[in-house]
Length: 399
Image 1 (cartoon, rainbow, N blue to C red):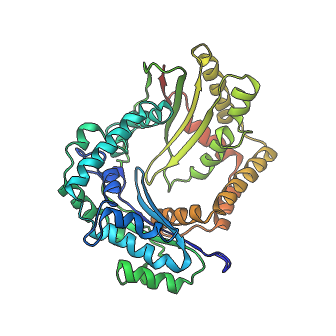
Image 2: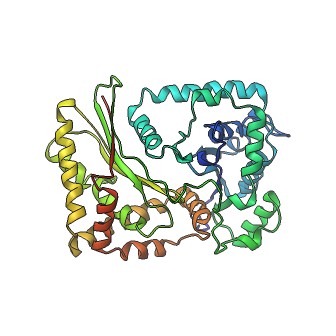
Image 3: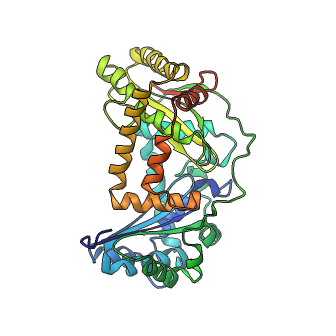
């Protein structure tokens, strides 16, 4: 970053997400995330929370299906303190028993709160059905029954197993030389890091991946949730991070229901027909698979019409190639969105960690733009035909 910026960002991205948990202990990774802040060999919980905040900085963490991420934002002169704290949390946590009891209740309350948020709950339940029989089906928060089985020794064993160099990436964004960053990394995370900086070899290898023979079973399910609106999600398994269809599908999903108000489904369902308040299309690629889904909320008597119009749009992209002009406009919009997002240093820091962990290198903005620019109309059509095939697609409805 330019010298005028006084702020540094850092993140430790670790392959310690939900899919790597023992089968009977769902929610263990997320429980670990909470317990990282509850005490180390040399710090109490209060001192952990106060370490960076009294300097005007902050530290936080989150868990996904594949990663557990610790990230901090501090003034440049305090970056060493942030890295020392993160190192202390991942290598020296003691997991106090009394804190576990309290934090388990906090997570159970978090699970209960999802019942009041059908938009969040329906995504989790859809993926549970979609990936049934694989580690990807496990909800990030876990289940109440499994959470009650988790003990101190389970968390300590999981941390010891997952917080290992082959599964960890440290990323830093700030006005700092690479040599200085490596010195700090070696100081707080061990020697030998210099040889692994920007390695060309992917380090995401693990034995608990989904079998290549896995085929999700299509379903159409309606569940009574006594919600005011009807909530509907339709989707399919999709391309993983290393599959060729990933970039065309990203482009397609942004066209269908990206964050911009001119997204095709938003213009049709909301702006033209007034059928919904919210409609969105999302795509999450994982190491060896992915999830693509379209969600909307509507009134009961409008559900059929919403599904009919959505199917019509999906069939259009699956059976007819976009014109060169249409595709160029879609590429320009996506590139603009990504460039603006990457202009946020915190987003850049987190995406660097994800990229290095997944691909063994940090993809530059120019490389990303080049991949998007190279997408052809036939690739978009093929992605639409494969992922949105009505014979392979599943649907979950809350009413």
